[in-house]
Amino acid sequence: MTASDPSLPYVLTFGETMALMRADRPGPLAHAAGLSLGIGGSESNVAIGLRRLGVPAVWCGRVGDDSLGILVEREIRAEGVDARVTVDPDAPTGLMLKESRTPSVQRVTYYRSGSAGSRLSSQDVDEDLVAGAGILHLSGITAALSAQCRETLHHAVAVARAAGTLVSFDLNFRGNLWDRETAGQFYREILPHADLVFAGDDEAVITVGAGADPVELARRIAAHGPRQVVIKRGADGAVALIDGQVLHQEAVPVEALDTVGAGDAFVAGYLAELLLDRGPGERLETAARTGAFACLVPGDWEGFPRRHELELLSGTEPVIR
Image (cartoon, rainbow, N blue to C red; front, side):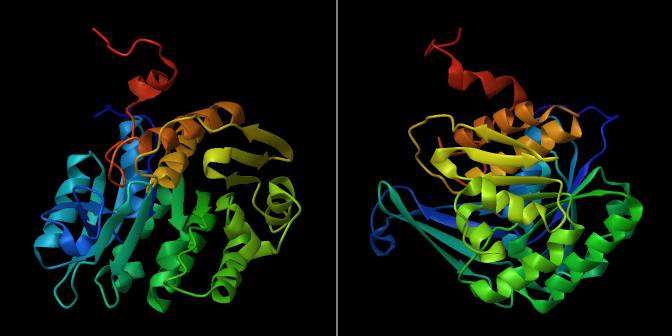
């Protein structure tokens, strides 16, 4: 755990975190001899990534009154995140299964319909927390869960704007939760109220239509209002448009074992440096390194780096003594 500077403002985020089960080795899940149990959720992943980089983070969420809900809260708190958890006695904690059908291809299945996380309401996110945050970070996944979640997100954004809190939004499209047209319409509703937007190439296309290249997509998103737009491109790095300046960031080459969570790690790295008032180039470089670290081990967030580990990917010594 990396200690945070008590003088730093915190990043606030909220959304659904689920229990996560995965097989210990590649192959059909139907023939797995055993499953490991953990947790995963985009927003809590970002919060954990921030804490490991020494930045205070608060996560708000709703879980069921069950053992999986206890697991979610315990794991997030164990990472030093200030977890504000509402326990819902009438809905279960969501569950996802990860199946490594081959060593390089994963399939993720969600059991979250009617889950406690999909019942998140504005009462679960304290307005004072929003107003007091340095950054409010949101994800399109939360908006896709239910109409109530969308209302909660809109409410939090309105409170943040009124208080002068910077709003960060990761489009994070999930095709099994809503269709592209509905998602694109919602994204366009949020963009004018966001200061910072993260998007993959395809997510940007859903929002603003097909573009000739990532720079053009970033410009089209920025035209809706955000001053910072970052197009995440996985192994092809990232392109950013920050206050009108175009920047390109190469990916850090690694032998990827599990890419789930890499985008959240990237966001955590960028937000950490933004909160520390670092320049655009340093934000993107740290984001690329944290994203690469996430790919090195199985799990959504377990491989996220501490700040003192960031230089390990450029080291030449295989053993540190």
